[in-house]
Length: 273
Image 1 (spheres, rainbow, N blue to C red):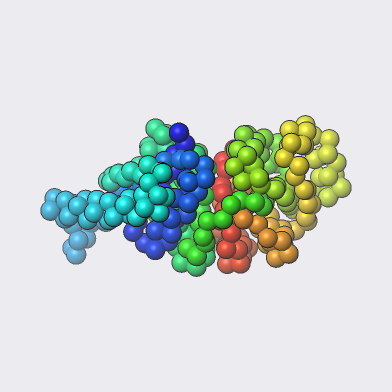
Image 2 (cartoon, one colour):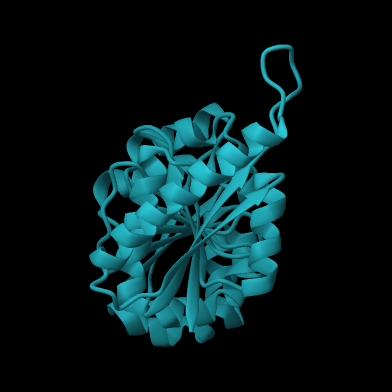
């Protein structure tokens, strides 16, 4: 049975991520595991983590998670198993431990505010993007689940020889569930474009992809993010997939990549090589 892990911090964006996860779980027949992590506050004169305060936080978290569990069970017409857990410690460490045990199909995170930029600026959950090996789906707060009919694979030439081949089973899985169409946007900032096309055409990776019938686009831009934005400005997509072996999640802390966050309401699936 597949499983989906959803970190919950009781914000509106986390609730939307849980709803998104429930709708996706119905299609792929996956269990949902909600997890809330209580992080000890920095010691100060105003707030200390006493035993009484800790118990109150545990009780409050369990009540909220139980309410969300009931809501998701009703949303999925009781066809999906939903459970929850409350942990104490570091968000990234505890979620990573859970993922090592469960090997989830995906971890689904909510994007705070109206853009991914707000989510990734200073959020403790953002560390999950760097430390988890599981597929991570980042869902903007206003995004509703839609079948992944059109998936954009955003890559450069290095991705073709590393992270993307490892993702072929997942791509074929998504095609089986959703009848997905794949567009590959290859953005290169250094090499000559003709050489890139030649490298791609002669590589064995294209042969592996032939059953997916991808449409391949070559774009030259100074930044990978700029190339993706250019494509999305003229084309629709239900999901953007990135391979952040070297970009983080396309380095969203930089000014260029913030443009992608600000202009794209599309969920982003991060797949580590």
